[in-house]
Amino acid sequence: MNRNFAAAVHSYIRFPFTESHSSDILLNISYISITNILTTRNGLFMKRRIISLLLCLLLLCGFFCTEALASTDWPDELYLESDAGIVMDADTGIVLFGKNIHDTYAPASITKVLTALIVLERCSLDETVTFSYNAVHNVEANSTSAGYETGDRASVKDCLYALLLKSANESGNALAEHVAGSIEDFADLMNERARELGCEDSHFNNPSGLNDENHYVSAYDMALITRAAFENEIFSKIVATTYYKLPPSKNNPEGLGISPGNRMVKRNFPDQYRPDVIGGKTGYTSIALNTLVIGAQQGDTKLVTVVLHSRSTQYKDTKRLLDFGFSNFQSVRIADYDQTFSSIGDDLKIAGLPTSTDQVLSINPDSRIILPKTADISETTISLDYEVPLSAPEGTIGCVNYQLGERPVGQAYLTFKDSLPTLNETLPDELLEVNPASMAPAQDAESVPAADPGDTAGRMRSMPEEPAESGPAPQEADEKAASRSVRDLFSISIPFQSVIFKALIAVLALVLANYFILNTIKKNRAREEAALLERRRRRAERLREAGISEAEFDLMMQEKRQAAAYDKQKNRAGSGRAKK
Image 1 (cartoon, one colour):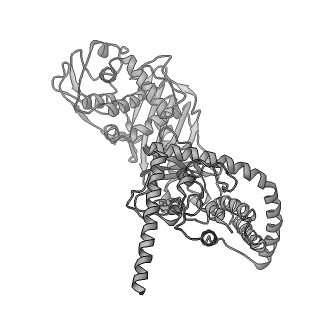
Image 2: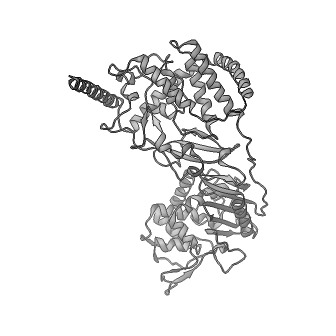
């Protein structure tokens, strides 16, 4: 067995396996392992046959011995009277139920949720806002107002309370002018921010939601906006407030007490009040009819609801959406139930570099997924995706996606922290044995093992290299690496049943293995070459992002190898003198 076997296994991200996910990952490892073993030139024929049999047996038993899964049906029995509505999990953005979620309607004053979000992201609360004539009078007749007049001055904080509790349209205009200089320019900011949040159906033309044929939203887009707003603590605090006293103004020299229009946070409306509701925003125009957005939480589960174009059933439909969500679904913290990724910070290795001290990759331990209460996390499937969304945190290089059947139920982000270890760290033997010349693009890709194009380890390191002179003999290194890889692979715990069943599987494994290998060797060679080029390109890209050139990296590795070789010689010399 040669180094290609060990390289094939170590080229994958090394996660701790669980029974629920071992079959998916074992499929990838077994495929490359079998191919590399059987194409080895210096291995014994019988050893190749035995190992290929065992690997196939492990793979097939992983599938046939899996227990029957519980139902993965997604609850969907809910009736809404409003024309459009949605309930979304606030942590993951997963839609739990929706009706006409991509149809567009006039939003009315729930528009102010996006206005408030932009203001909170761009202003401090103690900034002073001056009300212009345009801000005060560019509103519809008899629309809601906090009584501000031209020339009045108020803090951003007071304007936000007037905007979200009193639904004051002049406050929205004044804030828009304060942030962007004009209402028109602020509308551009609104559309830009909506696109950043993933909105594709909506368009905004003013900060208050006044009737305009070019001002419309979908329930799905409004849920994305409301979800982002509730992630802001100040927004959540404002919409949860049941009473606020505005400072004096020209029309209100004694100040003005205001309370929200949202009855779901007000105890004096027992038919609509809910203790699990954090807050929300109401809206109404003759065109939009009644609209309502709400954020609520029970335990660890947080939900966002949107109701559009309702004929006075907005509270009834919102209650139905919340009851549906909390009764049928639960938010699950991944690290509490799935050990596959919970200790990634400790167990992840790239080119043999442990990341337990200065982590190269990390996964958010508080990442969550949303599941029906009848389902279990063991029923989910996972995949690694290196197409990073724009909304991902800075430094993200990949996503771990969870699915229940065909439905996505959440994701966690892999983030890039420290690009390289410091020079005074001890590097593993696998890296010290790398030939500096081979860090540059090679001409011969024949001996390079196949790898998944999405392989993170392959992105960060070079291909398997020849041992340096100071390292162990090539044959010894091959046998040691292969032995370690086989031991790691066979440590996966997969249940076996009867002796007869294992014998049948062994025969089937031999037949399938030979057929599979003969038909994939040619494809594998082409894949090897493509993977080699792609990993070299991505490695260079990651080094550039870390601010280190390939030449600098090669020099660092060469210095480490020279230092290691010097230390070994020094130790040998010291041992020789001690014996004398």
